[in-house]
Image (cartoon, rainbow, N blue to C red; front, side, top):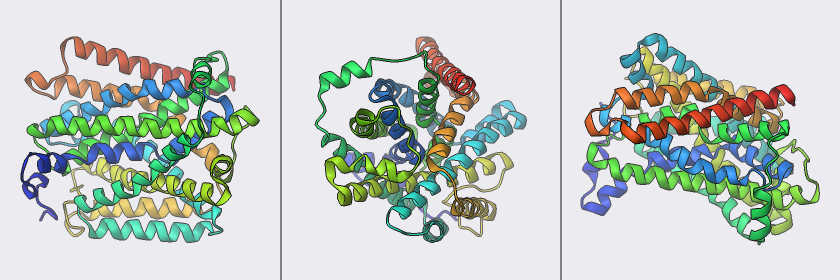
Length: 417
C-alpha cells in the first residue's frame, strides 16, 4: 500500500498545484552541492584564486540540460533510469549503468559522512559519536516516513547551505579584480586540470540522473506538471552553482590571496577561511551549518539512489511509497550502505583528498552516464517530447564537450600531476 497519495491530489488552485510539483529538482541540486563539492570549490579557491570561477557559471546551463532530460523521461515514461535502460537496451547495459552509479554513490556517501565527521570534530565531538547519531537518525527517518516527508526534511536541511552565500557577500569583492583573475586560465598546468575535472565531476554526477528521474516517478508527476518541474530544476541549477561559487570566492579571498597554491588538508582549514570576515566562533558556526546542510541532504539522496538503482534492475520494489514490509530489499540496502559507510568513516580518513578524488572519478564516468541519458531521450520518448532536430544536435555537442573535457582533464591531471 502506498504511504502517500498523489501530491497533486492534496492541493487545489493553480499556485498550490504548482508548489506541489516543486521538490525533486531543488533536492537533487542541493544534494549536488554536497560535502565533496564544497571541498572541491574550497580547494579551487585556495589553490587557484578565482581562476575556476568562470567554470562554475558555464556549468549552470549544462547542469540544467542534463537534469531536464531526466525530468522529461520520468514524467513521460513513469520509469526509473535503470529500469528504462534495461527495458530499452537490455540488462547487460543496465548493469553497466548501475555499476557506475554504485561507484559514484559509494564515493559520495563516504565523502558526505566524512564531511559530517569533520564538522563534529570542529566542536570536539568524536567521529564515532557523530556517525552513530547521523546514521541512526537517517535510518529511522527513512524507515518511518513517506517520500513527501523525506523531501521536506531534505529541503529544510539543505537550506543551511545558503549560509555560504551570506559569507561570500561579506567579502566585499572588487568585481573588476575578480573578473580579470577569473579569465586567467592556466590550461597547461596539470594541477589546474585536475581541479577543473573535479569541478565538472562535482556538478554532474551519475547519482543525480538516477535520483531525479526516480523522484519524479515517486511523486507521480504528470505531463501537465512538466513546465513547473523544469522551473524547479532550473532554479536548483542556479542555486547550487551560486553556492559553489560562493565557497570558491571565500577561500580565494583569504587563503588564495595570502598563501596561494596552498592545498587544504582538513575541514578545519576550510572553516578557517571564514574567520577573517566573521570571527572564529561565527565563522565556525556558519561553516558547520553550510557543510551539514550539504552533507546530510546528499547522504539521504545518495543512499536512496543506490538502493533504488539496484532495485530497478533486479525488479524488487524500490520506492519510499512502499512500506518496509513490502520492500525489504530496498530498505535493507539503504540501511547496510549507511552502516558500512559510517563504520568506515569512524576510522581515520583524509576528507579533503577523498572529496576531490571522488569528484574526479565522477568526471571519468561521465561518458557512460551522459551517453545512456542521451540515447534514452532520443529513443524512449514519444512525438514532440523526443529529443530531436537542432536541439538534439545541440545537446549532443554539449554533453560530448562536457564529458570529453572532464575525461581529458582528469586523465591529464592524474598522469602529469
